[in-house]
Image (cartoon, rainbow, N blue to C red; front, side, top):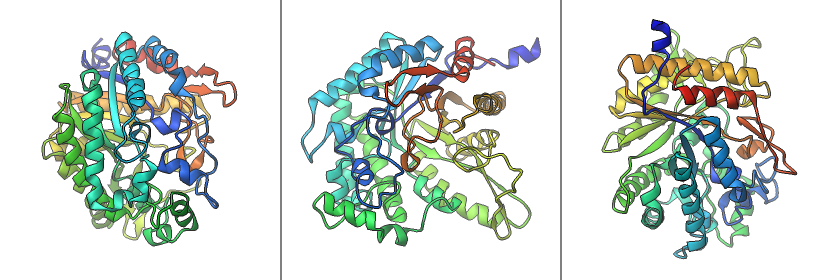
Length: 415
């Protein structure tokens, strides 16, 4: 009986699923990512195209999320749709997102809105994007205008999704160094396509150290802009966090990466944010000579990193301890064709969340990434993160067993 009681989560715990506009809406033609998808020598395996056509299917999609048992939906609004040209705001786009928010409320879902999930307007990229400090003001202006129109329906807000992810994937060895990116033919082709002598798109086509400093300023400006408008809801940022572990001799390297990639952002979050969004998928292990990669017997996800769901507990503890803020797990999940491994991954990750809660850490929610098999950036549609499969031709949705399994956990509030 005691074990059964321990499996319960707090009564108002946010049980959610997550998605991002460019990855599920389709036809995001005014974005920097769309430009990069269509230039010669594109770093993308394929175009996002119609994606999951969530832009037209959102009423039934949101209804399905609620029917499964979730009480939260995290999604992003698309800056490139809302401000397709500099200073020109689309009321049609704002009204579309207002209908999405209203639909969430009809189904009693708490909407967590992300204002920037990797994609920006092409005009912003043509101005140097996130490499130019003055451009932070453009983002704050967009956040202010969007909140003025939507704020009364927002349940919680994330300013910027994973502003540290470019640095993270470089450290992991999954992205080339900045100099190689800056001189890449596709970056030059993208600049030509937008009629500029520069083009900078986050996260795969920019100078990441410059972008880091711009993001830090943009987050604080956006936080203030959002708070100045209608609505009364918590605001924070989300960070891509790995559980950084060290074997003897690796502590110094681990601590340096933790400082460069994590702590500078966590330090800004603790300056007044309402929560910290934790997004975790795996761990990194450091030895005297750098990261320890494991061997051929190490189970890996489709993304190529280690299957290690216990990482979530470690990152929640670190982020909460560093910032003193409540935590929302805004992303956690696995890319896999084997849905039984998805269930096992989430089961073990949730056990880590329980451990944190039992130790008094203020964890407010868990959002699985992702609601659909969607456009996984440079990988295209090969990676399967979704609880729901999507036919790329007919757009038919198919529930996976993991969707029902996790939805039932959300319904009863415990494992």
